[in-house]
Length: 129
Image 1 (cartoon, rainbow, N blue to C red):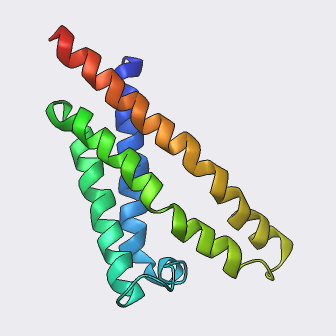
Image 2: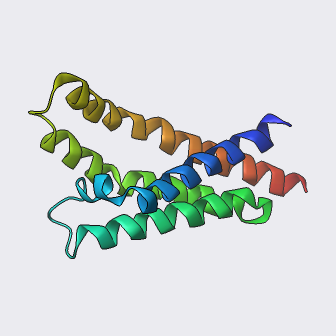
Image 3: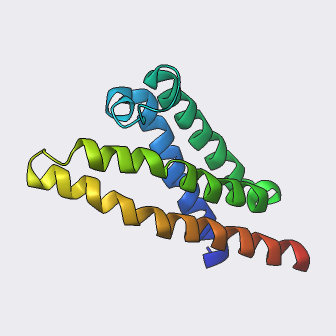
């Protein structure tokens, strides 16, 4: 499988796994919904899980891949406040948990860049086709 095909499918797999996790174990996601967001945290947990599943599906389809990859990059930026909330809330937890929460913060950058790369690859594939 060519890299240009493998990369978007790997990103789709990551998003699908995360999306399913929001429904299977919602409590851990509820805990990181920023308190400033209106409404019940569970609604946001389910909504973000559904968005991740939709993004995964869109990335799996070559025709929708470019636009979906752009949406995925925006999504990764949009959920960053939840990662900040988690880091703040977990600052007094044991070191391994606190460090895991802090490590999530810079991980958003490669996710955004990965999604943008998939969008660019989709753009060049579209212009070749």
